Length: 254
Image (cartoon, rainbow, N blue to C red; front, side, top):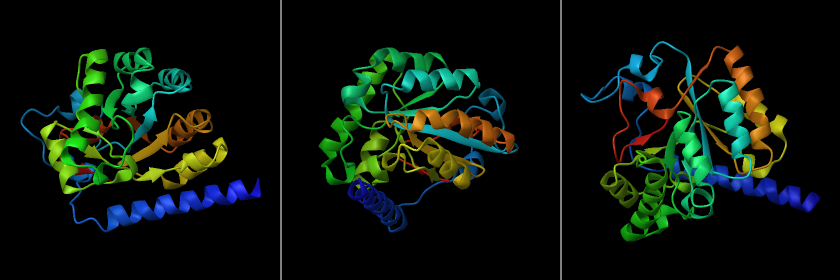
């Protein structure tokens, strides 16, 4: 057991280090939610249509990667009970194809359904054709279920390159990163997951969680309740950017 815990800690530390290098050392520009809101496009939804004005409200976006999974129905129940809409970055292979009913339910209940690639391969290591296949297959799978192609994607591990940006733009996908994560791949402790998110939460934040790990979904009610007590309004990523709009190919990060 000590060996497994040590390995998990090392894995988590490496993941954080890699992400810092990827994002910090990348010359690619990112756009903050506030900057997006200050440049509305002619066809963007006004804040009133989004249901909340995040230029005034203390907004935060709850996002989930790599599902749907066995606990996603429970998560959707929690979100419905608490009247919270989230953004789901879905994997195509073994997830969207395996759980079309959950994908359909996400869309029907007002959540934003987005793209997290077909098989979670690092996009920066693929050719343009490989990137295109990873993203387009998931686009088509989701569209077949919901009738709508996603407009948002999240690159696995936050890995971005010029080719990833080019293909994302071609497919009509904006790239969405994050500001707070619980590293829930490294623990099943729901209280720890909750405290990590609460500690890292901030206005205009984008929370990254995974509904495929055992400790995550049980942590969500406490996360929502505590952040609501602190005055946060939960929104989807498009609502966070309104009256701006996520432009294809652009990288968004708080």
